[in-house]
Amino acid sequence: MEWIMAVAVGVLFMIGVYLILSKSLLRIILGTSLLTHGVHLLLLTMAGLKRGAAPVLGSGGDAYADPLPQALILTSIVISFGVTALYFVLAYRAYQTRGTDEIDAADEVSGKEEES
Amino acid sequence: MNNLLVLPVLLPMAIAVLLMFFRTKTQLQRVIGLLGGIANVGIASIIVLRVREHGIQTLQLGGWAPPYGIVFVADMFAALLVLAASITGLAVLIYSFSTIGQKREEHYYYTFFHFLLVGVYGSFLTGDIFNLFVFFEVMLISSYALITLGGSKKQMREAPKYLLINILSSTLFVAAVAYLYAAVGTLNMAHLSQRIAEAGQGGVLNVIAVLFLIVFSLKAGLFLFFWLPGSYAAPPFAVRALFGALLTKVGLYAIVRTFTLIFPYDSSLTHTWIAGMAAATMILGGIGAAAYRDIPRILNYNVLIGVGFVAFGLSTGTRDGMEGVVFYMLHDILSKGLMFVLGGMLIAAAGTDRLDGMGGLIRRRPGLGWMFFILALALTGIPPLSGFAGKVLIVRGGLEDGMLTLSLVALASSLLTLYSIIKIFREAFWGVEPQTEPEAEMSKARPGLANVSAVVLLLFVIGLGVGANGVYGPVSQAGETLADPSLYIEAVLKE
Image (cartoon, rainbow over all chains, first blue to last red; front, side, top):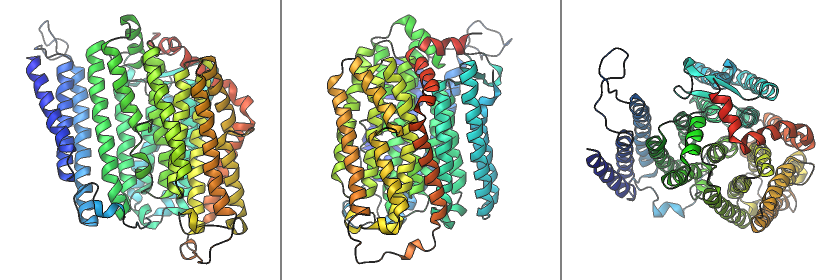
């Protein structure tokens, strides 16, 4: 089972990195969100995929699943959800202000800059 | 158990939440923020005194004994950094009053400011590596907001890049934590150290160590700093002071903590990497600072030189080097805060950020000029100012360890620091004032409060240097813990 997950993680990382290497901000954001999905799967897989009971006292069964990776993933999902939302809003605002969706538009870099 | 340890995190968080309710009452926001900042300096001082008297303090959150629960640990290193950060935070807050502008104040500037401090203090105090990630995120998300706030075109160009770099490094951070958990099955830093010592650091653990090094280097601007000079030039100077003084130092703290506590057992590999990165950072930072002719870039490259210096101290691995790291980081937090405050005041006074458009300011702003001069000496490490003791200890550690080339590089980078800051001093304060009078935007600013902030920081920079003998006691205590991880492990896992 682990090897399927490993392949899935690899594919997610691959697509994520490919998207991040593009110029369009929208694709980059999608890339980062795929990358974080990959990391969450990695976290789940690295801690071992076990089929055990819920780790609650008295719920029966000899094998317990390790709750810690799940707690970590939950925390990380919440953070990446918030950051992705913020990134989308920022990208939209940047698009409105700059008139382009490219992360490093060539016509701007050499242009003169106004002070904040 | 010491409940005091949670206060540096709890207090700014409470203030940040409270300030959300007073969006338009900026005067009230300032007063609350100021009182909170002063209280935090007090709390941090008490923690330092406690650690000085009773050794390392720990707090088991929720009463869960380590390694199962999250634990807060204040050794002397963390306590001193919290103190220095709270002093600088307070000074930058005062500087913000006069420079940040009504519009930003009404758009939750102070809320984000205090949330950023929550992340900084939390990162210093936590003893759990995943919790470190969480506090990193608290800090970074606030910094995302602060770098964007205002929405100028320049900010909109730099902010997406800044976010991307930090999201990438955070992703790698979680991946590194996943590998580490798979390899040793714990997340408590003391417990990690114990288990890695038992298992022997080699093979996969070294790979994980280098992954952590990459993650933290991205945040600290150690060698992987390509994003820093651009991003730090976008927000207003008060925010830059906060970033330059605190954000990179938190990344640096994470490197120091990781490689003195968790992965110190194979130093021939990891510390060689760190030494190489430190050398490259100092050289490139020095060249950047010497080459550019606009103040924001010169200041940003100076941040990098400081980062390289601390990493060099860490790579020596000697007791002297560790004490130097502690001393130099304290100096760096205070002096980089001061550097950006003075830089901001200078640009406000001159009306431009290019050296070519400045000159003769010593006549109009003599106080600012002399403060800048003292800062240049402090950054270079002229005794009796604050940079001296740290640099002496670090270079002595380097020579003890036989790293002659690196020690020379470090000293040469100090010269480049001196050159770059004196260049600003010479061209901005001496010479003839250019014909165009850039007066307009100074009229509404209140330099009085900015002066207060600069003077406060300057007094601490001088005090840290002149009182180096008195400060050396706590610094030595911090260095002892860094040089010998078993002290930290015992304090956390004793029960």
